[in-house]
Every structure is written in structure tokens, then in C-alpha cells.
Length: 154
Image 1 (cartoon, rainbow, N blue to C red):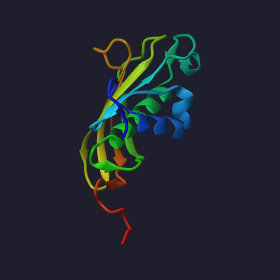
Image 2: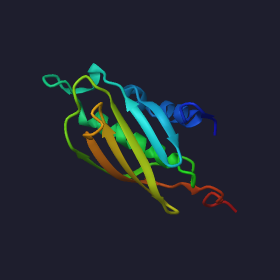
Image 3: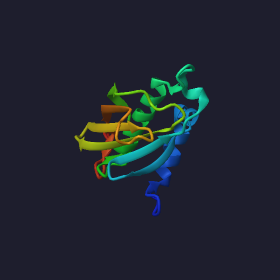
Image 4: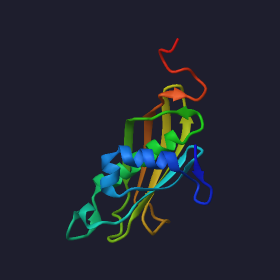
């Protein structure tokens, strides 16, 4: 893995994840950091992401996509996990509306990995980091553990 030492960003993971996910590109997601089972992804504010023009608040669907993508990135950045992942389940609790005009940053941690399932916790924050916008828990597939032969290999 190539890592930008100053920012702590795994460049291969960043490029692959954002390029492979059309919704990540459409939302303008930017990977801030990944590594050791953690990920941080920023979604800049954009007028097309507003769910309610009267309030100017970013749509909850954009927030859920951000948190889902960040959770998957945390799994892929876990030292035991090899390969891509897919979401099994994702529960999001919306705590408050994001502040209009502000971007949102998600931080996720893959806190437990079994042979087939990874468990993730995530939080979404705007510029008021003391008051989360949303919190999430999720499970993701584990395609293969590092050092293990792929399933079905002889």
C-alpha cells in the first residue's frame, strides 16, 4: 500500500474507492485518512445535496451514503481484511440537522473482525464537532483475511 506520509492517506484505497463508486463521485467525497481499521471521509457542502431548499440542510440520503462509504473504507483499511467489502447492515441514528452551508465529515472504526463479518461504528460531524449529526453501526462482509487462501482455492 502506498501511503502519503504527511496526510496518512492510502492513495491506492482513496483512488479505487472513489473511482469505483459513482455515488461517491457524485457527492464529491474526499478521503481524508485511512489506516489501521479507521477511515475519515469529507463531503463538502454543495447546493445539489440540499434536501429541503427552505432550510438548506443536506439530504439524509447523502449523509447515509457518506457513512456507508466511510464504514466500508474502515473495513478495507483493517490490517486483517484483504479485498473489497459490501454492506450487510447499516443502522443510522440522525441526531440533528447538519448546519446549512457546512460540509460533513464521517469517521468510522472497524472495531471487530470475524472470518466473514466486520463490525463498524461511525459518526458524522459538521463544523460543530461536539454535536454529532448522526451515528451509525454496521456490519460488512469480509471477503478474505490477510494470509488466508481465497475461498475455493486448492
